[in-house]
Length: 255
Image 1: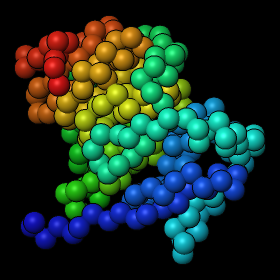
Image 2 (image 1 turned 180 degrees about the vertical axis):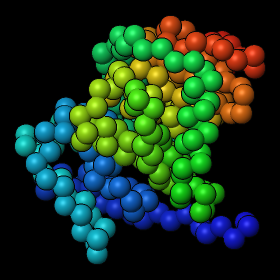
Image 3 (image 1 turned 135 degrees about the vertical axis):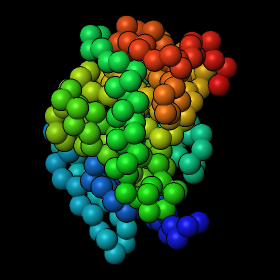
Image 4 (image 1 turned 120 degrees about the horizontal axis):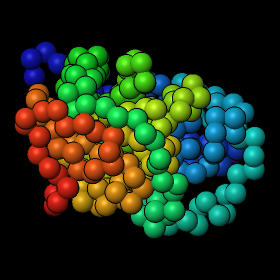
């Protein structure tokens, strides 16, 4: 493996207002961002202000989140679980029907495909855990001024949750942001982006048919296979300007 080390993962317990949610396989980095992002993605909070405090016990690998509002544990734990595709056995409590009730995105930002490819390359060059191990996923936030922020994790869902948590804590406007991920954009990945309100989500790999259908319904721009000088725009929401020769129309993709 050319001297690369093994990626690390840890069983980390999340406890919210005294209630154990689950044990998650996580990379032990940017865990406070993950708590904010996960709780927001699953509908347990509506903003960063809903969290009073996050404590991390390094010895027991336990995360404690204290919410300013009451935690309706009975309603939460009786919701149907949906196991995520790939990257370990993650779980979400949002069904596709739930996600369709999210607010549609009305952002008017526009970007060239060449700009997304440039940022994808910058993302790859600035992902230290992936460069060290070759076995990490990442998520990258691009702000309106071009600034990028990166979060990495053994799981692609965790990396996106960490990135959403960072954006929440910084009070960033989601409709002005681009989210890039190294992982496949499946429906539950799209649901995380939709819940936060990202206008554009891109990946170096594919988007699933279900994710594309949801993106079209929620008016979210999805671009896949951002590699080299090629890309696949899966949706046509008017935010992506196709300025590349090697562009494939992914609108009818069966991935």
